[in-house]
Image (cartoon, rainbow, N blue to C red; front, side, top):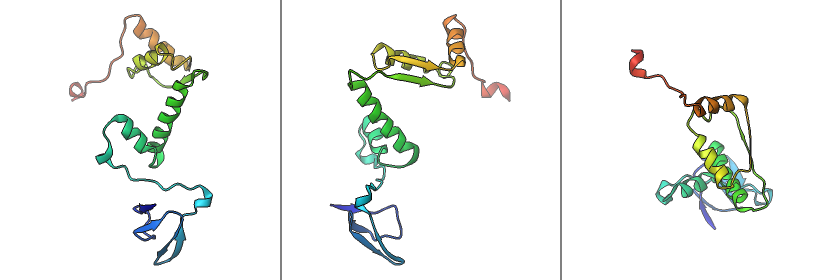
Length: 142
């Protein structure tokens, strides 16, 4: 299987996965026996949906990869009828107006229990009693 090598300037332009690639500073090998998986560039030309984007991100690095992997885990959990899903929340999810997402996950049976900070509960109580949260208007600060 041929693969484009775009991430390491020490390696040649094309190589067989697992085969040595000659470089100016020495010979390098992608060690197939170690289980290392090469990263792939995010090709927006191949993305047709949010699902495509998130799945493509799982082949990149850092937080993009974590987001893609998390989506796969969430899907597996949602499909597994025997999986008891506990959602843990920290931060001002209610203030950030994410409460409807949390309730939708509960209503659809994707989330079975919620563990949260007291602040989240207090913020939810504020809004449940008809009050609101506000953000500063940058125009009024001038």
